[in-house]
Each structure stands twice: as C-alpha cells, then as structure tokens.
Length: 430
Image (cartoon, rainbow, N blue to C red; front, side, top):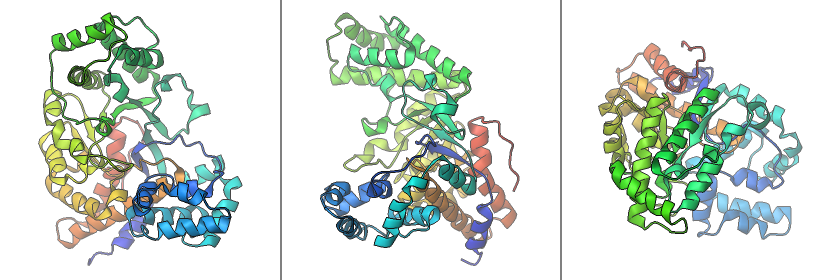
C-alpha cells in the first residue's frame, strides 16, 4: 500500500465516535474471576471450538492452582490467537492494563488490578477512546422504568428490544410482554395488543431515552417476514384468547409473528425511529447462518418505504446481498457493528466496495456489540485500522483524495450515526 495507512489511522484516532450498537450499561466493577473477564464476549466461542466443544471456563476452573489455571487458559488460547477475537483480546488488555494475556505474569497483573476496575477506570477508557455515544440494547423489557443516572452511563442511548413482542405461542407470552412492557392493560384482542404496543413505543419516544427499536430474531427464526392479512392474524390471536392454556401450532405462531413484525415496522415509521435488525453471523456457535441472510428482508423493506432499516453486521458472509440492499433502497442503512472483529479482511473488502457502490451517507462504520469496556475499545481500534486500510487502498487506486477519505471516515464513524439516530450532537468536521 503506497499511502501510509498507519498515518491515517493515527489521525483517525482523534475523530470522535458514535457507536451504532452496544450491549453494556457502562457501569463497571471488578471481576472475581480474571479468566471470565478475559474470555467473556465472543472469544469464548473460538476457544470453545478449539477445546473440542467443552466450555473453556469449565476446563480452566477444573484446575486447582492459579498457575495451573493459567496453563489451561494458554493451552486453549494459543490455538485461537490469530483469530480477530483473540487479537482484540490481546489488544484490549495491553490498552487497558498494560498487561500481556499471553503470559502468566500478565494475567496475574490483570487479576491484581481488579480492585481498580471501577467507574473512574471505565470513564477514563471511554474518554481516551473518543466514544461520545452508543446505541445500546440492554435486553430490558422494562427499561422505561429506569433512571439514566442510577442504571446506565450517560453515553448509552437506549433501544427497545422487540423479539418477544412478536414471538407469541400462547397467552402467557402475551401476559409476560404486557406486564413488562405495556403496563398491564387489558388485552383481549389483537387490536388491544397492537394498541398497547403503540402506546409503549410512543412512551419510549417521548421519554427522550430511546433512539431505535432492535430485533435479533435471526437467532430463533428465518428472517423472511411474510405479509399475512389482519384477518388471518386476528383469527390466530383469538385462539389463545379463547383458550389461554392452548399452545399455537408452529404455522399459526409463525403467521402471527410475521404480522406483528410488520406492525413494528409501521410503528418505527410513525415515531421516526430506525429499526435495527440482526443479519448475518450469529454468536455462540451451532447456529444456521442461512436464516440470517439480509436478502430475506427484501419484501419487508419494500413494503415499508417510510421505515429506516438499520441492517447489522455486514450480513456476514453475504456481502453482495448486503450491498444490494444498501444500493437499491433509500431506507436501508448499512451497519458494520461487530463485523471488524468477526473478519477484518471481509470488512476491509466490504468498505472498499461500499464506497464504489453506495452513497457514503448510508454507512455506520462501528458498533462494538460487546459486553464490557475492554473489548469495546479494542474492537474500536480494530475498526479504525480496517477503515484506514480500506480508504487508503482507494487513495492508492486514485479513486479518492486524502481529503475525501477523511471526510468519509468522519461521516461513517460520527456524522452518519448522529444524523440517522437523531442524537442532536454537534456535527464534526474533519
């Protein structure tokens, strides 16, 4: 590469960041088990595969002494250490603890420093990384009842998590959703349920704490949402209202699931909130990625032109389908959260092709999708390096100027998410 991507990366580290997707609250405390801290997050899956399907923490905790535990950890980790997850873990603890997890001494240093892993520790790391905000899915059905200052950090901008709203198999599912989200109103019909859902989203919007709805149903179902009629959905819903002990057969539950998801998309348009959808790669292993191909959303997207669809994870490994949706639909945003740490080379190729196929206003270049601050900033570092390599390669090909590359990187990391999620922060000029 003729253009020095490392110089570009050094400059990019000064650009503020708005994350498109996070999971943790920003409230930080010590870990009792240092190996849980190190392995927690997606590294666990790589190590599980390397350990012949045995959970790595199970193997480590079976050892008696700290030294034996370190040896067990390193034995498994060394089989994975070139994966993107493992490289991020190495970087995370060098960045945050100045400690090398490839050595027993480094692991002991992290263990001994745990009393210092407090809120000040967290806040200093976030500030140093330049993270100004993140759209956070905290998996909370009752998030509306929490006060920001006592439950989550100020940089967290919340989403409403929706999978349980449309995954209904019996009336107990309706009751659970109602009690947690909809305030315990009387629900005796599909119209009652939809009205309660509308009220919940309206309340979330009015609160000023929620900036998107988010759905990760690809973990449990194919994301091709058909478009049944209201009469069909009403008929199915009435079955479980009449007999509240009855379990819906799979085809009926799927029909109701599809119908309600379309109504969630309608509410996103009504309240001007993006709909974040998990596509592509799935965590934890033993999943079927075919059901998560973003191309399966085509009909849904076509039927809801006023809804902003925020499509996740580069739809890894379905790059072409992901690019097509961004190129073809004005209401589709291309989100690279988690992607740089799944497969960095994929993300670099995808970003090159994004510049050549799609408007640069569509791209959300980073979301850590992590569960703790150490990996959050390490994943951001991976993203900054990948962005630098992708854009500098386009400069080398004489397709971009340095000035344009800097503008694009700034928009991808900050201005685009600020605009799409309507955060109202001051725009940033490179």
